[in-house]
Length: 136
Image (cartoon, rainbow, N blue to C red; front, side):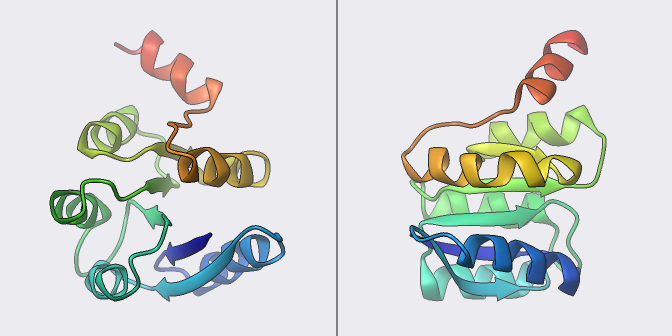
């Protein structure tokens, strides 16, 4: 499956790409360092799964998600963030993300999330589900 990696930190993009490309069933088809480039890359590549940082320069991840879901309703996004903000997770899911991961969860949760989302499922780790339930 083709994966687009969107994050403003080059090291994060490289790390995510290395993990994805090490899998037999997936490969990175593109990378973007900001929201404007994310829109361009997504439209050109139409990846099967997009890893989308929430906190992007030029055009924020939230706006990228909202725009692309409107244009491509079946697009599959996994929002990743370093923010510890429940509203961010709620907003991402409401806008159409199929998964939300805090960056400290990536080692354990990234590959299962990509595979689940690729199969059309939602993937929300228990830690995030519990936080959202407990914080209204």
